Amino acid sequence: MKKRIFIGSFVNIPDFRKKYTRIKKEFGGVIGGRWIPEENFHITFKFIGDISDNQINLIKQSLSAELDKDIQVSLQFKGLNAFPNIYNPRVFFINVYDSTGVLEQMNQSINRKLSYLGFPADNKPFKPHITLKRIKSVKKELFIERIKEFENALFGEQKSIQINIIESILRPEGALYKKVE
Image 1 (cartoon, rainbow, N blue to C red):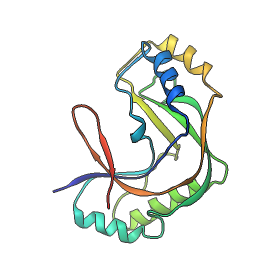
Image 2: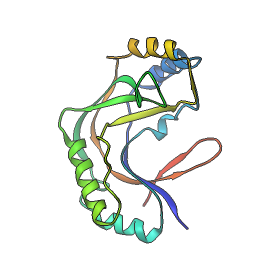
Image 3: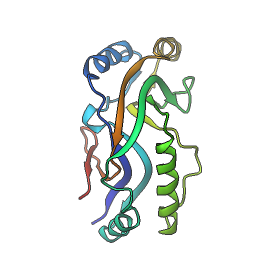
Image 4: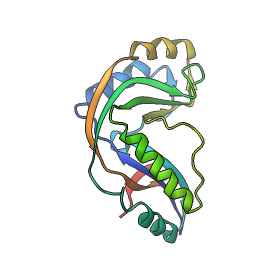
């Protein structure tokens, strides 16, 4: 049986619950869609898709130097944004800044190693972020106004990450993400 897989790092933003409640309140009537639960917050390095257990084992071997180890970083979760942009938002997220450059190095290493296994490298620039909502509908003018109010808001920091193989289990009530052992 195939599993829907990505390479990522779960994040835990300390004391974020109150801030997230405020974001939900400020944007609740402005953008439609489902809010992502905090336990699903993660940085994606590489979305792979549906693959077999054999392919997962090959990925584990290829990424053995990166997986499940504490990696020192200096992350700031700062400002709200949207893909592809705030004027045509489809994904609502928190920016992730890494002053050490480690996230970018990890992303390049992961993509290079996985390309040797036949998974094509991403051609889009790496933009670390924490998805809050996939937008189904939007009141654009109000969204642009509100998002600018949070442009420089600091939501938290994190000093280490672990890179994992993560399975995405799609369910009617929302995706469940779990680390592949």
